[in-house]
Amino acid sequence: MFRCASFFAGVGGIDLGFEQAGFDVVYANEICEKASLTFKQNHEIRLDTRDIRDVQSSEIPDFDVMLAGFPCQAFSVAGYRQGFDDEKGRGNLYFELERIMKDKRPSIVFLENVKNLVGHDKGRTFSIIRSSMQSLGYKIHYKVMNACEYGNIPQNRERIYVVGFLDEGMSDCFKFPDVIQLETTIGDIFDFEGRVDDRYYYGEDAYMYDELKRDMTSNETVYQWRRKYVRENKSNLCPTLTANMGTGGHNVPLIKTHHGFRKLTPKECFMIQGFDRAFVLPENVANSHLYKQAGNSVVVPVIRRIANSIISAINLEHPVPSKGVITITGFTKRD
Ligand SMILES: C[S@@+](CC[C@H](N)C(=O)[O-])C[C@H]1O[C@@H](n2cnc3c(N)ncnc32)[C@H](O)[C@@H]1O
Image (cartoon, rainbow, N blue to C red; front, side, top):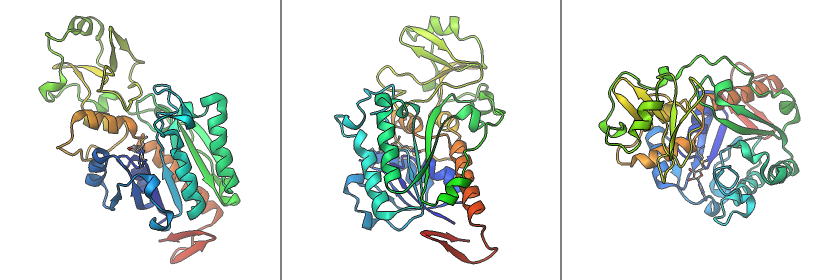
């Protein structure tokens, strides 16, 4: 198995995708206490909960693949787009990854971020990230992919994925996954028939009930309440989950069910990110935190497919003997 170190791990969505493809996560770092609780319920390794800026490279075990969905508020359309100059210092966190890349020289780097990273500051931000990786010797591949086209998950979620290889041969063998048919429906994921906890329903006393009743007509559609009106999304697709849904006027998507109009539950939000039903949500964490964690995370099947493509590139370049341990320059595979 190839060893991964996961940075900005959140609840570990990227970790899960790589593990499902056969990688071994040997280290993970995440500062948020609430996200750490969810991570710990679902992953066996010990989580390093320090600020990444306080982590010395020498304290990180050796690894082959760097995984990082680094904070995107500084680049996202929803944020203020201050990029590297973000006043809260969130834009600069990429440079912590650069520092660790320099010190640890992982053979492969996998990054995930909002689509807007590509165009941010007329392309300069992404160009700086690419140049930084290239100057460290990485050959870069990147692609914007939508979960509904690449993950068989009915969510409209476009994200940029970056894969860098130190080994030119491996890089030449790498190809992002192809589009696949969307077969999963929102009805496979959301419970339109069963009854969930009362707190998720909007009763007749809700101030927007009349609008919900008038405009939410289909149970093949996911809706959103946008301050004064109901927004209907493309049939059978959930809108992009966001990290701020469930807080300050940013509403959780809505569905019309047999028992009334309701918002999605946190579990449903994780499932529309492709997490397994068995993924455990901690009980002592407020829903607002769980919604944020789901919105911040990734669509696991997309990650798994990219991780599988990375495995194919490794195997094409370095066919693995049937038994034993092989070491490719700077790259260890244990089977
Ligand atoms: C976009 S989210 C990544 C989510 C993750 N990919 C997942 O699947 O849940 C970015 C994460 O970086 C964490 N983070 C932000 N600043 C950090 C820092 N200075 N040190 C460590 N983690 C940090 C946040 O708490 C957040 O969980």
